[in-house]
Length: 231
Image: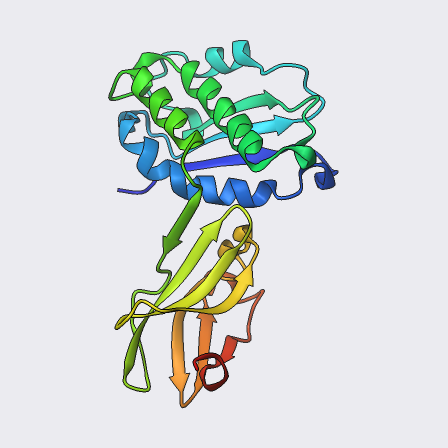
């Protein structure tokens, strides 16, 4: 079954006031799937759940949100969206924990204001799951390419290690779990600059090819000389 997309949209032309938000958004898109999606009623045909942060908005628009989604048989367009206030939030000066708290509180407001028929469980279980995320480390390691890399008689797993600070492309040697860094990206770039679909090994040269979705943006593969990297 297709995953529900949990995302955040920032409604401002001056994104310098929200440096790093894109990294948090991208990481949350991954973290919220196992935490919440199985608690959502799929009969509503929900495809995307989001909130739009609006810096000039004085309060969350809960009345219109409730009117839009109250006891609907199915969700129009498959999208649930809360217009959320970000007024008075000095994002750039918040600590990592304060940023996590702020974003999770917005998610809690969204789900608290959906009627019970949107859930397969008691709504309080969803809120509890969100609260638990506040105190967990926001870090995820995924394998963007399932195929193993074989080099100099060793076998490696290709991984992408994600945090609110960066996404690191790395090799993990299967024999001893040694971590070998290839390159750091911004976390949000895993959907663009680091959206790899395959790799090719030619001698010592490892080349990652991009997903066809981004072929028009990135035509040349990402290349690494393993002789220089693996000591």
